[in-house]
Image (cartoon, rainbow, N blue to C red; front, side, top):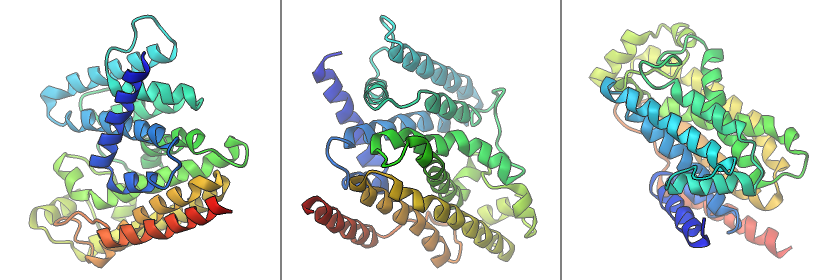
Length: 307
C-alpha cells in the first residue's frame, strides 16, 4: 500500500469517529497525536461491523450481513498474513490491519469480537436475542466489549506487563457496553432484542411483556425503575473494578481514558435524572458537562507534559 492510501484510510476512520462517537472522539483529543489514528481505526472497524449487524434485523438481509462479516474476517486475516491480493480496497480494513501490525495487537481479539457480532445476526447458528443470566450476557460482552478494551491496550501502552492491565481493560469495555444496553433498551426492543439478564429483571417482577408494554406506552413502570436502579448499581460496580486499571496505563494517556470513563458513567446519572425514562428519550450527557470534564483533564495533561 502507498503512504497516501494509508493516510486516506486513517482520515476516513477519523471522520467516522468524529461523526458517530462524540464522547469517544472527545476523549481521543487528549491523546498524543501519534496515537489518535490507531484509536480512530479501531473505532471505525467496530462501527462498520456494528452497522452491518444492525442492518441484519430484516430476515432478508441476515444472510447478506453474515456473508459480509465472513468477508471482513477473511480479508483481515489475509492482510495480516500478507497474502497476495488479499484485503480488497476497504479503507477501514487497510487502517485497522496497519494498526494491528504497528502496535502488535493480538488478532484473536478481533476474531472474538466478530464471533460475538455473529450472535446478533438472525438465523445464524450463533444467534441470540435474549440473555437468561448475567453470565450469559457477559459471554456476549466478552467479544462485543471486553475485546475492544484489549484491542486498545497496546495502543495506549502500559507501565506494567500488558497481561497485568488486561483484566481492568476488559472490565472497562464491559462497563461501557452495559451502559449502552441500559440507555438503549427501547431501541433494542424495537429490533427484537433484549440485552439485559432476564433473571435479574424477574427478581423485580419485570418480564418481556412488561418491557414491551412500557415501550409501547412510553412509561416506565415502578418495577422497571427498580430493576434499572439495580442494574445501574451493578454497572457502577464494574466501573469501580475497572478504574484502578487507568493508573496502569502510560501516564500521558490516562486523562483521555479517565475522561471516557467519567463521561460514559455519567450517562447512568442522566438515566436516573430522567426518572428512568429510557422508553421516551436517549440519555445523553449535556455538552457543557462533557466539555467541563474534558477541559479539566486537558489542563491536567498539559501540566504533566510540562513536568
